[in-house]
Length: 151
Image (cartoon, rainbow, N blue to C red; front, side, top):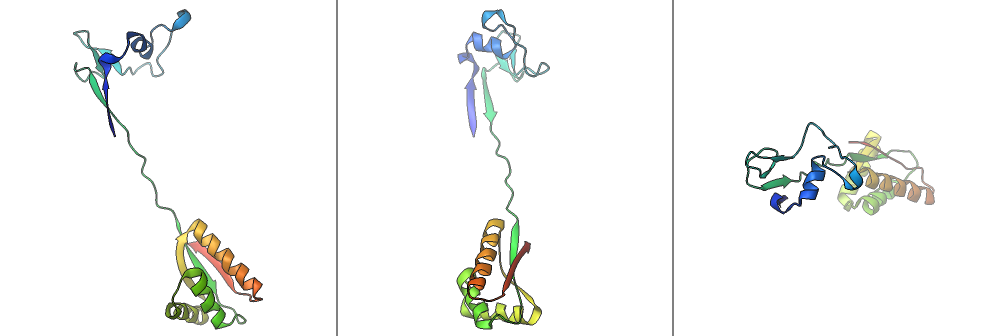
């Protein structure tokens, strides 16, 4: 975003305050950065921004800070000897929006390897899904474990 600033419209009083002039009631003002004064008078007496020339206008740019992508977390299901395979498939379909075939593949991977990835999400979403799975499993008297780890 660019803002054009016409210095000639600036009042003498505000120009004096910006450069360390006199404040009301006789108090002297000091610039915040004494070695840097953005307002200067050019040799011909016109106000100048930072010594860039005597046009009486300047450009102010506003930069946006670069945002970071959020950290992602893997939601993992852990195998146990008591939770039925059909229940694990139901969990994957209900909480992770997996189709029947994909849910069955993930369930078999968990069964054969002891752990499987259900999905990768931001921290808050992953935490919510882990809580939902663990609570739902407990309500149905199954010891199914669900955890999350940074991707």
